[in-house]
Image (cartoon, rainbow, N blue to C red):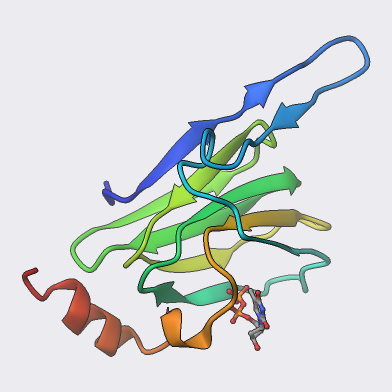
Length: 136
Ligand code: TYD
């Protein structure tokens, strides 16, 4: 199991009208939410991600449909199927991630701890591995 990744069950308010799930900045996600973006209308068969972050923390929720997130901390790899809008996957810093196997019309909501900063990305896997395996 990749250590800095885990499912987080969201606060639920479900009744006969349907379901309502809540994310409170800091309380649910464990970090202040500074940015929200979402992946939608995936091209069939496409994959995304293919990078890691130096400092960014994220909570990723399949608000519609399903997809798979493969995470890799440089030592171990794990796969999570996101198919429940009532929970999110926390992905911490220094985790390489790939998103794949999107169901048709799936929507991936991403709550992020920092504003967009290209300097926070590792886009080269070998460079990521070298830093992830370096003793701190
Ligand atoms: P990228 O992070 O590669 O997407 P994914 O992780 O889903 O594969 O981002 C795709 C493009 O969008 C890239 O040119 C950077 C840009 N982008 C922003 O400008 N702001 C953002 O907040 C995000 C997430 C991406």
